[in-house]
Image 1 (cartoon, helix red, strand yellow):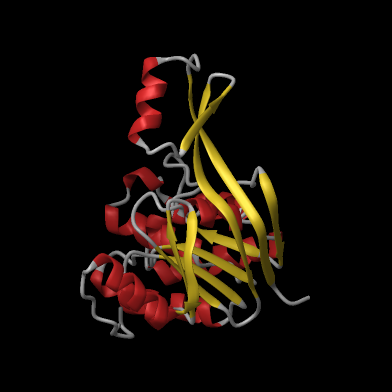
Image 2 (cartoon, helix red, strand yellow; image 1 turned 180 degrees about the vertical axis):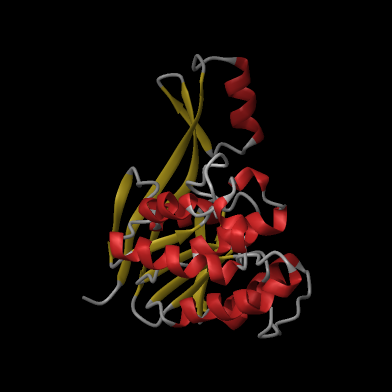
Length: 260
């Protein structure tokens, strides 16, 4: 079955805190946000997504742009199945691998080798996929005998290399990324770039949220511009980026080197 994503008037809101509905803090909070926040039963909500509708099919690479607080991260969580809309529908067909938190499931007290399994299990890996990753990842990371030492004893570069390798170990039908994955050590970056690029090439649908317009243009054939949890524009990447550029009055360069 081909991969597919379809959102139909999907909306999502976050509960912020519970206070009496007549609380001065609630009133001030509502006024400061221009009335975009409402309260019910003493709980204050932020409307993170409002009536979002679009479809993606194999071959689509969707970039998501917008300022901080525009709803990009919430959109990724909804597409990854980590959050569910309170209204509207989200239909996702195919295996989704979310690359949103690289350290997901890692226990600092366990060895690097032991830490390969749990994150992959959380991502839905089979036993065979875990076994393959345990054979391949130590060599790819170049950790040698350190793979059997506790993760907490690793340098920052070693931790980043292992987390990157685990995050990119599974083949997906749908890949959901929050920014481009950092590779860590300089000598590791070239191998990491090749690995990540191959992963994207072999994935049917890619969704990438980023503040880097050059990266969005390099990776994506479609782009969604979001603001205040709403869709401002969805279309060919260059057209959306140019419209976004005009709105921010901030000239940008639309050229991204393949080496990252």
